[in-house]
Image (tube, rainbow, N blue to C red; front, side, top):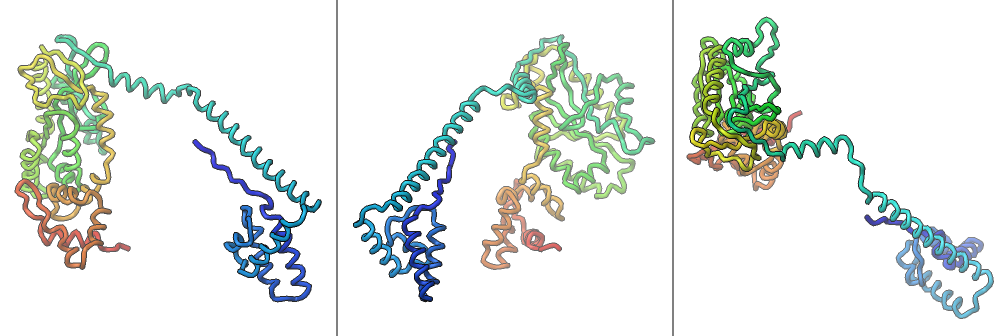
Length: 426
């Protein structure tokens, strides 16, 4: 890193300064009008930080006209033709001393900077945070292997599934699972509501490729309205687990849900077709826990004779057949937890999608088609600004193809979006 030093001489042009001061005194004594321009020239000369070689060089300064510059040059030629006077020698000596002092100061600062640089090059003692990050990295890179019979399956339940706002109507997840003899543990999960891990005696945990998102019908309607349903579905698709299950419970007679029942069923059908998730419908909470207990027993039988080892997400083989393969690569629970927590921090693009989903008649397909062309609101606003007129701006999005059939977005939605993003709210 280079250090920038500012070198500023106390009096870079002592000779010119003395001449101007002498001429200014004469002009003031004679009450000549030139005193104003001379005073201005003297002030600008004293403010200038660099040495000037001639009157012509002074022309860059304020107050130095052609006559004054020529006068300085004549005085300079006369001065050079004479011997250096004792007083002028003193000025010259002082000038050289100033330059030498500046040079010494520069050298001292350079030496000080070199000493600091040498100190900074010494190895820094690692902090507790550095050691923790190093240990976490080594743990993430460590390969875990589990042979048949050396592990047990454990159903993990998210903490949100075992608590409620109303203490009189607490969620009975744990009591139901206990009664069904399903081995489980409550933890905070950063993705999904339920998943299964293979746990060995040393505490290592590998995640089985199954994850469950539980939705009651009224909660499903609420999550569709506020955009959580699409955001959760997107995160589940990118979590690295192959089998995604939506466990959907009826809410009484499925009346007063906030959205028509047909709309909710259509949303679940779209999820099955577009993303390949499995949708399981149950009559009540107990039936949902019975399904999870049955899944635990089935998975216990499937994985009983398997050899398991840890892999990174990029090395996961999504085409692996669980029934025929005897050696399976699975994600570590800690890696899934940390990666999903990072993915929960939405990008500008994902926030834009959620914003679009709040608008009437905008499905996930349509929102994704818009964001594919304009990744952020800023990009969309810039595109509106580049339109030739308001008509072109209102129809800017109308021709964007949406969904598998690539149907155009349409004039009506395009106009609504333009009105929304071009209106200044107060």
